[in-house]
Image: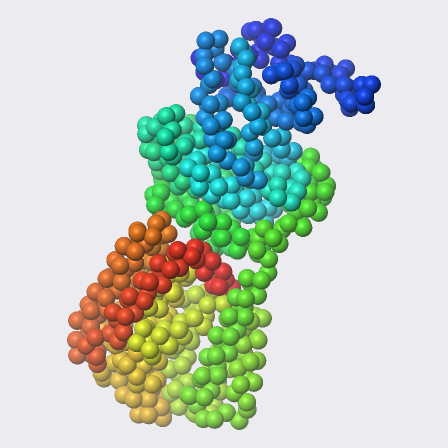
Length: 621
């Protein structure tokens, strides 16, 4: 007998006495207006477990019927899930599992289970009554702003981190199992995760084993559908799919039939950005990563939470739950709007991180201007320090527009003062940066760290810094830009920072006299040297960082960092062999030390939870 048939057996027309047993109280029972002698309300409905009076049906599913009930001992409202069973059946497996799981969990983002009881007809799960609406209801009603969805995602990440820390895998995260709280009081959470009836206990769980396929097909991770043992990655996948649906209004896995849905499992899904081009690119990239068919490539929940928090402050909050009219339309008290507005900055991290990132971008740009004014041209007829401060303030206020303006002004000043080829070479370094990092204005001065590290014989370590960027595109862009800046710096200074200037390039003094000479004797030898493949090598090694160092465990991170450092050394040795006599120095400067330092930085950043997480905020435009 199916769960649906059991529910019908308990509540349907096939058993009149059971229908009467679980029908809601008659309409004439007006407990909100009639009172007893002691002033308490008159309450109707069936009393179960000698304590809980069932008053109003809240919902039903294959697992049972959920009722609003009144706890007559503690005088509070609760939710009671009525789970029908056969006369000779012990406690249903899902009820037993949910009760065992609940004993492990205590978190404001998880619906609390108070009690498990039974009689001859049913099993009862008594839980916290959460006033609010399910995420599925709010998605259908169009009542969520983009920022609301991010807040919900943050709350669910916190709840799942708590569950996973206690060896509990939910396995059925979906909009129907998420309750958005109508009155999110302090400490009570913004959204709550419900229904741990198919949860998996990672330690000593006889109720679940490899080969079991449980959950909801349209939200099921591919490995879960294959019956493989559940890991936290299955909840990451389901959460990513839930947020994808909340932002786009569609579930890309769900087909017109269960068979069509099953055929889509395991396929790479379309990017969220193809549905919502107005959402931040990096946010879409993180949701896409959560939906990777390969479990090991999905981000950890802590990393996904950071990405949601960082994006939330830039998301639209129009016509969402903070709007009183929207809250009223979906039956959520108007006081929710005030409460959401109050808790919003705390949940999304506030503006402090954005201010710090702008200050860092401005400081970097100002430092570059000061160094350029004092080393590349004649002594300026104005205060170099004041010019650097002005440049830094402008870039801090307007990261992209300010940086372009400062770069153009500096190159123009060089061309006007020197009237030689130095300005052309400087432009060759500056121009690729906005193209390689088009949406990361705050990071446009970061490539300058590569030649600075090269000056202390640690240049290759820059690829570890680039690898901490928030997206693959930015990792590639930073790696490529760093190598270009090292080459240009070697050309301008004739110093050995990595491979040294090309052997057929002349010193700056020989070509500084004209633009033609700068192009012929400086830039052309640089771009035609076989060493230029280092651009691809640095970009690739930066992109490889999150593949090898993923934060799964310290031991795996150490192995991944060692593999990364070995590849780095081998790749640079191959560049030297390829370059032959065109490369002045037969060994990349600081190669071994830079590789070791880079690997150590990766392990430390991963252990601190910064890799592919907190670091991304510094690279936002």
